[in-house]
Amino acid sequence: MNARQRRLKALIIKEFLQIRRDPSSLAIAFVMPVFLLLLFGYGVSLDAKHVPIGWVIAKSTPETIGFSAAFEGSEYFIPHHYADMPAAIRAMQQRKIRVIIRLREDFSRELFKQNSPAIQVIVDGVDANTARLVSGYVQGAWSQWLTHQAALRGISLSLPVVAEQRIWYNSAVVSKHFLVPGLIAVIMTLIGALLTALVVAREWERGTMEAMIATPATLAEVLLGKLIPYYLLGMGGMLLSIAMAVFLFEVPLRGSFWLLPATGTLFLLAALGMGLLISITAKNQFVAGQVAIVATFLPAFILSGFIFDIDSMPLVVQGITHLIAARYFVAILQTVFLAGDVWAVILPNALALLLMAAFFLGLAAKKAPRRLE
Image (cartoon, rainbow, N blue to C red; front, side, top):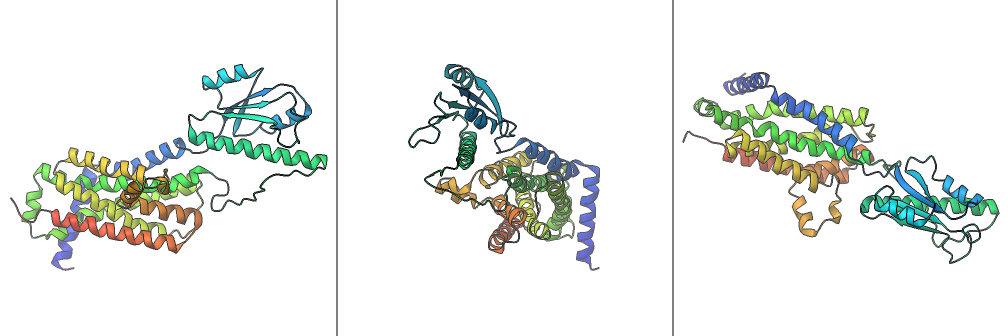
């Protein structure tokens, strides 16, 4: 082992001793991902389940009972029955129900007549996403029940379009399978930046940075001595998050497991480099921590495609998303977890992460102090 390797080893050991003395870094690396994954994994859902719906059935017949029974016992709806439309409308105004399904008195007689609307569906559009989902569910249930009734009566049902749909990669349409992989990228952006955002600032506050600069250690050795321990902590937190996604949230892992730590390394280096740059620039732990949260978590949450579709954003905002490292890792994680090893997606995004890691680490090295002022 030459002198350079001995100095680097000593700096890494010093940093690990610092981590043991101040276990807040361990909490950031291991406790925070678990807490945030549990919080968002169980708290955030795009599925519309247990939606209260109001039924207004003017005349009870075998057909109306049969159609309303199609919604009974469903995990998507909680039926409530009302005597007339004013009562149902009051319930919707009070947010007690989200949908009103009205079956007229001549429902059974007009059921299969052309150009005769047999049912009336009114959806509360305050929550546009839930309204779209619920509207789709009701239309699907109506079409399915109508087709079944036509088959029982031996008549042909002429629908304008018959769509035969297949859902790939997430056939159960469980939003958690889509959200949890993206959530790992958003959380690790915050964890990676926070881990290194405090290390150099802490040295400045304690006045030990001057002592490190005065030692024979080179700038590269000092930065590597800071980077390597927190890289290992960050990878531990990431592997823990992946294990939670697979075993706790039961997200299918269809691609190669080894692609996750390999591309995760590129992503973590970009996040650690950003944190290191913030720490070198701020020279104050409180300021560095605040800047790291604002500059990493919020943009990653909103602009990474984790929950909001990037293609639906304005063109200017779409351009800004290319500056967010989490955008590339979200695409990789969602692809590897749900679709498999799709190299046409993985390689360009991995290359973007490599460039971002090189940029942030290079800029941090350039901004790092080389001599005492």
